[in-house]
Length: 113
Length: 113
Image (cartoon, rainbow over all chains, first blue to last red; front, side, top):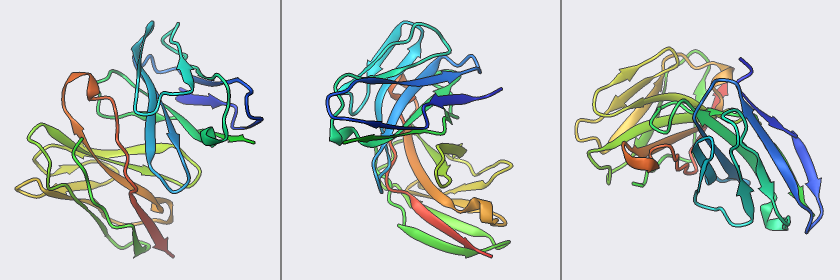
C-alpha cells in the first residue's frame, strides 16, 4: 500500500489564485480529513469526510472547499489564495470515524505571496 | 475538547528510557488519551491510545494515572529516530466528533547520541 499520498509537495501561489491540493489513499478508508499546520503550532482541522458524498466543516473551513466523489480521493480547493493560507497542509485517513489510528500524508507546503 | 498540558521540550540520551508527561485535569470519563508524534518534515504518526488501563504496543507504553488526570508516554529505549514532537490528545469517544484530533503545541523530544 502507498498509504496516504499528497500532491504537490511544494507550491507557491500569488494572492487571488486558486488551486487544488490532491489527497489519495489506497487503504479503502471511509474517513478522510484535511489539517493545516502553521509554524510552531499544532494541526487544525479544515474539513473532513465520513464517506463518499459526505463532507463537513472542521475548525477553520473559511477559504477552502472539499468534495468526496470517490472513497480514494479527497481534494482540497483554495478558492482565492491569501497570504494567511501560507501553511503546511496534511491529509489524513482512517478506516472509520471511530477508528483510533489515523494515517497522515507527507504534507504540502504552500506559500502565498 | 478537554485541554492537555505538556512540557515544551525534553532531552534524552540514546538507548535510555524517556518518560513524556501529559496533564489533563479536566478529562471526562468518556475521553480517550491518544498520543501522536511528528518527525521532522513529516505528517503526524499514531503512537498509542488508552482509556483507563496501562497500554503497551511495539512503539511505546502508556501509563495512565488512577484518577486519569495525567498520563505518561514511555519510550523504553530512545533512538535517534524517536526525535520528534509528541502530542498528547484527548478525544471524546462518541458521536461524529470522534474523528477530529485537536493538536496542542506538543513536546519537542531531542535525543542525543
